[in-house]
Length: 179
Image (tube, rainbow, N blue to C red):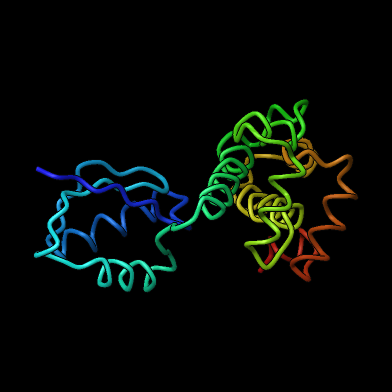
């Protein structure tokens, strides 16, 4: 049995993994292993072509990663999502830049340059957007105070978080919660 490893851009959560599993099963593609950003399949070109896989992924908002730079960008996104959404940025003593340098084993400047070259926003803006997305989730759970959320998301104060939240969403935290 011959296998093929597919690196998939924008496959960053369990829902994405589940969707890929469903679609590949519908196309009779045998998945050997699947995790965030990677699917190992039984390679059988007579069952389905790469072109069909590409169009299926595109319909899900994903794509195949073809270059080294795209791989670095996707690994950067995965590391940021891991830090902000899964670890709740609890180890904020370690700055995000240090976390990325350690995780990707390259300088922050290089990571940032590659990210900006391949994405329509800067790395810093992507990080801020992820922090605001996570803040939205945390606000709606009612488990934490805004002070605790500000700390978890590595903001210097509730005012700083609130200002950035309003700037990005157009709503104050209270308005967002009430909607």
